[in-house]
Length: 499
Image: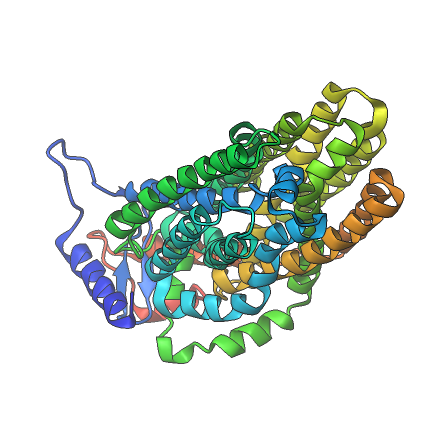
């Protein structure tokens, strides 16, 4: 939505507060009211924040279209040997069907985060789902051996949609959720992406069996494409009907402060420059990129690694990928809940990073033992920590960079991840071709060690938490100095409270 809509929503919020809380027939608030007051700099009035039940609908709808998009990223890679045979291309060409997601992100992230700042969540969601839907239908037309370029075109459209998706979880969590929910909400947003990857590991080997007849193979590939196109179309329609820009009344003190900044005082380029000069954040950008880049490389090359040691196990390769991601989803949710309760951002991030390194080493040294059940166990341990790290990075970045836009900070994190993802995927693929999977995995382990060391040097400057605590102090001063009728204290009292 544009600035006019935002201004209208702010007026509606103030009008709602003048009328008092909204009641249902049972006498309960429609919105869950937080018992604190926020000075609104723009209007010098007092805003009482609310948590709307619709916030859960919004975050789960976002998770749904993130799921659809992430599924498309990995649907080729996990059956790379079959796609290589069907389209008559080499391994590197099939790898690019995954790496196009990483490559597209790098040049487009800055215009997309600018658009997110200027137009908001709804416009971004509409563009994301429209592009995602278009990509699925283009791929439906590519189920012929001579149309590899068409399937690459469809994958490019889907990868462009991903640029609009990856930076949204932390922004959506901040705009819609309370101070003690943002990490959990961000984890749910990331959860959808991880679930999509999990389904992308599981379904393609089942839908597309490794048969020699080209016509039969084309039939199975088309079924896979049609199923993803149908799901993407339904999600697009739901986003058009349901997805809302933001709640009328802000959910937190920090969000109310962010809303009070006049649009003409905000400069996107100045925000980027401030982030680039933020040393703790830039250390996080590099360490996040190393961790997630390793995950992208493992996901893209998993089929090749498993088939090398366990020939003919395409379906189990998909199940191992599923195990990695499902364990990671559990890790993400646990991490988010833990952060909301403890606020120990650096300690948790560093611990999970170190455990990711340990998981990578265990997976590396057990992959070639000849027992698939061992691979399932070690891959699950690796996924729990490596994939569980994703929401930790997002939320730690928001803390380190507040009040900068969450979409911009997340965008820089993801840009780093895509760059390292391309480098690691190409490098590990070449190492596997020449020296085998053990050497390729050791290569990734070295960079996870470097990332762990960098994380240890990050200064834990939790700016968003400080803003919320500062407003809580103002609330306490307000209650102490207010008159018996609950009047708002005069401005000089607020100044004494160091607002």
